[in-house]
Image 1 (cartoon, each protein chain N blue to C red):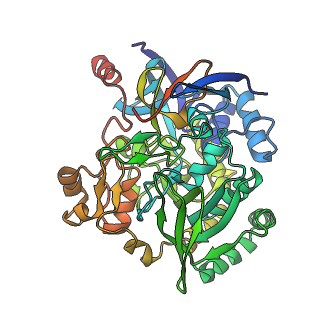
Image 2: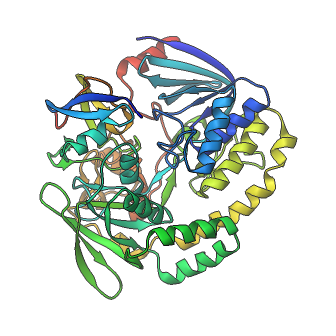
Image 3: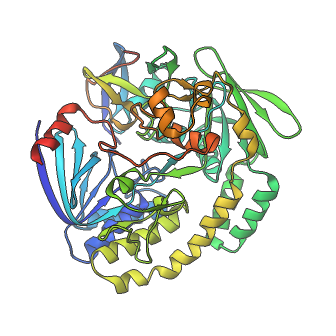
Length: 422
Length: 82
């Protein structure tokens, strides 16, 4: 096992929009910057597959900035532990790497929220962002029938992307009601850029049935999904499909922040005006501080990057941009709140924890997340509760416990190597 | 243009590029079941971003590789359902 050591003034974890912005700004301030990501390339989920030549203007300009900066890009590399303050351990294909830092910026992004319903474990039932990511990674979706379902603005972007790649999008089923969406639209109207994005999407999505107040009750198929059953308050019907792309908005990735000891509030990392967390010298930007989308992530990344590099005056220049974008963030939360009916979808036989095949009936016998873990192994598999945790929280109100190392499964020799260096 | 590479999925040769992930190539080859769950159910990819571990396959003999996070390389040997 090949161990290497690197040290940085500012280390950024996560190379999505927030991380790229943070790394560029810290590097601009002249300090030694490293940015680590577990994906093969920078870009995060929203800019997956984009490059400096992208026709997505934001992505292209930030990729150019990053390439022109002195920030060192470390990918793919997955941070799994902090053996002591100021030092992280990460796994890469070459073995374990120790990353020392003076200041740390956590830009760990978000993942989709998945909720269980009968048939959700069938092959070809994927996340909405999940299917989009696979298409961005080279899968051919042309000619396939897809139902896009769940909740959140991501559904529209995914449907537009799939359609542009030749998919036959049969329906978009958004669980939030029309009345909530209209109110959300009014918030957008006060933000020029968001509304023009929305109109663009609407044009791309012409002739696709968009249904609000509509949700998946089950997926059916033999060995893979062949149809889904959709429901509104008025009717229930079946739609045939090759893929179901279903995700219920986003949940923040706070495992590393939690491991390091950063205080959480309402499931998000608490950060001050300079994006510094409750742990001195550790900053956080983007979705882990509150789901707010691309522009807010970039603004927070810029503030964190300059602040971590000691340039607070420059960081302050982005305060007003951040303030505006935060209004959009709270509107998002109200608009896409989950409806009660979704709690009644899984039956006793429905699997909730996909790693350990723990069914809802087994969980009903438990009294807490801890009891569920100990008695049923719910959340004890390789995803460490990242998928079932938010579902269990929605269904039972149990909050996941704090993270423990390693926060990602690593080969035993990697963990052993870490222990030996302590 | 990304460089063309040839990989095998469960022994069958598939044309790919270096920019494609192993998962994309597996799905292109027509395979939908990537692994069996602990109770023997067929499973495919879910999150597409390295979080859920449902897309685990064997790559060049190494088990439990997340196929959504690994780019194709020439002569890569991908095995599903092991």
